[in-house]
Image (tube, rainbow, N blue to C red; front, side, top):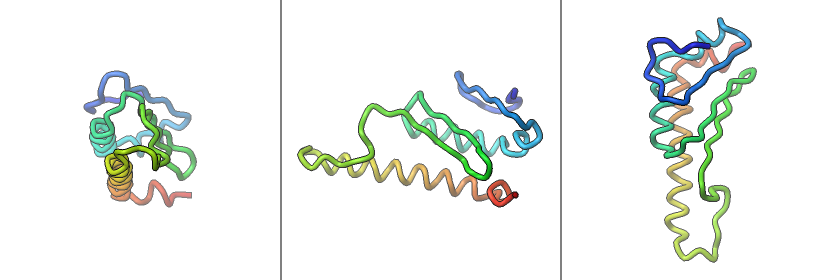
Length: 106
């Protein structure tokens, strides 16, 4: 899939098994939302895939964001980072809710 007329950062690749659906899903708004997400995530390793009616996002980070270590003296900073991550993902979900047909299409 070739992304034309979009502001995609270097290193962004796309592939699809359904060109028509890819053209429907990959809009300039989607690219803008993903670019903002990647910039905020602060990671070079971000992957997005669409499978059936789901969007899967993976972000590679250098820290453990799945649990809080009670022995860590800076637990507040870790908690705030997890909170910011959740807000970032929820904002992305809101951006994609603008076109609900993507997710409700059978």
